[in-house]
Length: 434
Image (tube, rainbow, N blue to C red; front, side, top):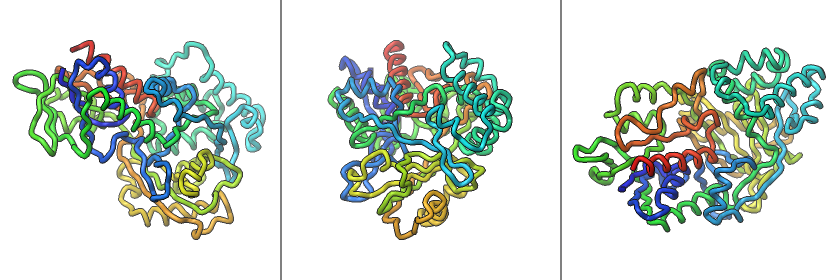
């Protein structure tokens, strides 16, 4: 078969890797950006950086078996390193670690019985055998958690975090999403030597060794039925080319624009999916901000700070790989209409930097030696009540056309592990249908 893959992210690369296994297909990847990797692509902020850094913060959990397995399969397991960083919750101006049950019990702002009740609910969600997540799809997380954790515990810790993550949509998020976040989380994290771009480049090299053509800076303009057979793909660089099968890994909104020939009901499914964007400012300092070695700080909306997460990347990864720069991610998930999406880097820096004194009272603007802003309008699906019934089929109504996006990895949250799972799944479908 002649196969086109739209999007050179991890899902598209993984699908290409599997489809090219026996050399019986002609495969072409079209990537709109300058490099492959999707949301996991890295950048080098300065010439002295040994490693690129992800535009949007990334790590793996140690039970992310799909991507770890693929890493081993392509002979890149030497790139993986496991770390045990500290994650905290910022509450009333102080940081509190919650990465073990003991640390949860040590939180001083709730009575013991409330913490025990909350811990029991979290343990139930994480360890109950054969978890009925499909029934959780029909339940809203907000009222369920308040009922079972108790109003005081839930409203103190979990509601602010849910609101921070989903903003005005937080009361619409279902319990299956929350369950998946608790179920999958591990205290140890994995990261690639050379960053995630190191893994992406290793995978792309294997894909090309199998004869797959990768064309970057080539946005696709249209996917349409071929009057003869299969599908036609039109790019900004070339006239329409015919393919037997096409896999599109773009956002649901872009998918609808590229394929207006899809039936109205399927197009309606695409446009009905809600999602949020991401705004991340990466800041280089000449010294650590979090001097106790903390890696990740969750920042509830109730703290009235201008970002949701503060991640000191170089408290997990040696700053020597970045020419001695101490690197912070300051990020938030927001509706694309939020003012942050129209601010300049300088304006966003002015918005964010004053808040750093909350985490280190000695902080001075002079510590900042560089900054880089990255934005993406499609970064976090919003899994509403009954979301399982809203997900568009991977096999679209147009014969030979497949759609695979982060909105379809549910109940799992978006992430590189599930991009690998999705890529392998859709590759199997294409093989079976061909």
